[in-house]
Image 1 (cartoon, rainbow, N blue to C red):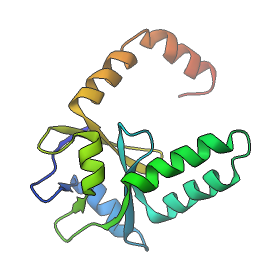
Image 2 (image 1 turned 180 degrees about the horizontal axis):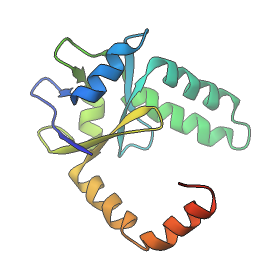
Image 3 (image 1 turned 90 degrees about the vertical axis):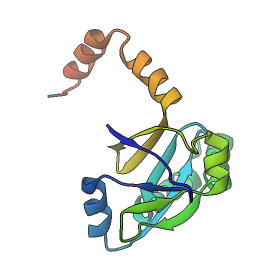
Length: 145
């Protein structure tokens, strides 16, 4: 978990490890969005294209896929990391999530960088703190090392 903040131009400076990862990718374009209108994410384009395939092929609940895809497109934009490791966030995304001029927390998960406001971070921390031993036992039984 890393602290972060958007600058006055809506850019977030990434930690060195994330910068090195994104710089190592063949395709430099990123997709910055929110699927749930509360948590932002920075996706490498190859990963984002896989998500678009999931949206297109999800037959169990096509309306859910269409709605999540809509959220992503409504708030999202392509971006590239600049030479100083900064990634821009669209005005729509910054406004909808209320993340301008506010402390953020970021971490890597499932091939993307997750961006949390302090409020969402505290909610997630509270939820994760509920019965962690029980949750851990379940995951260890499923093969977690």
